[in-house]
Length: 297
Image 1 (cartoon, rainbow, N blue to C red):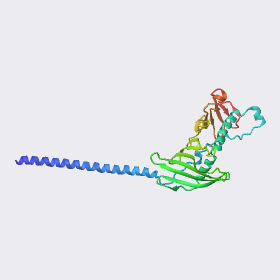
Image 2: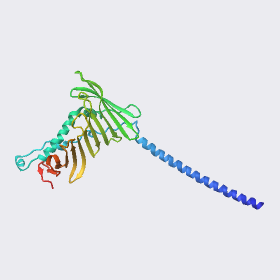
Image 3: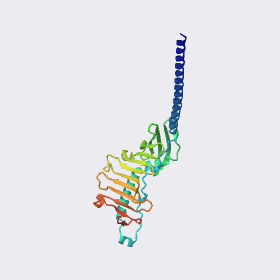
Image 4: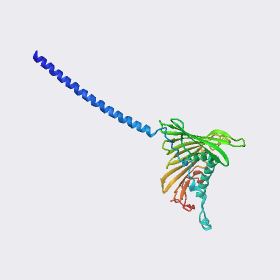
């Protein structure tokens, strides 16, 4: 009887020891899980704090709307001897095509671009937890306007939505109120953006131009007015590293009558172009630093 009791007692001691051991392991696991949970929560909280919707929204630079056409200004000079020795047809064809795009964009986008440029001078005012706005006047061609650039953050996509309202004050009856000249979406750090510009309401007010921009990488204009025969035409700028060239334009038209690829060195200004429509082949046609035609190597 005594022996049986001792055996049972030993079993109870062993079981109690196991329970205590398992309890300790469970407790340790629980503590570890709690620590990990706190760390994850803190990490998530930090990420959310990094995208605090109450802080001022970062405006993409004005350059996000403006492709740099400066390398194709028609400003070359030729001597009579140079004219006799060679031509500048390759360069000129490219420069004129690019200039047409530049002129077309400027004619239809000068007011919204002026309104956006001015926005950087004014404070970003709190409206709600996710929305902020900048309100300010501008004067363009002697006409007074009032602008309101509204921005809303989206914490799920880490992006900011933009909307530009413009009101015109004129004595000739052409006034309008809160016309949306453009909308857009940018990354929260302002290094990429997508814009849609509308024509002036005095023209037709329709969507006119889509712009996509990635800092130090690419920039593209696409015509989107469905009443325009050029709908779908685009010009795209890219940074490249190809045979000594560091920049590129791809220009495409819906009827392919002026499709071309231009590559050039932004420092030395030499370059090359290919176009099936212009040259009846897809061979490169080159020019040198003085814009004169060259045989491509």
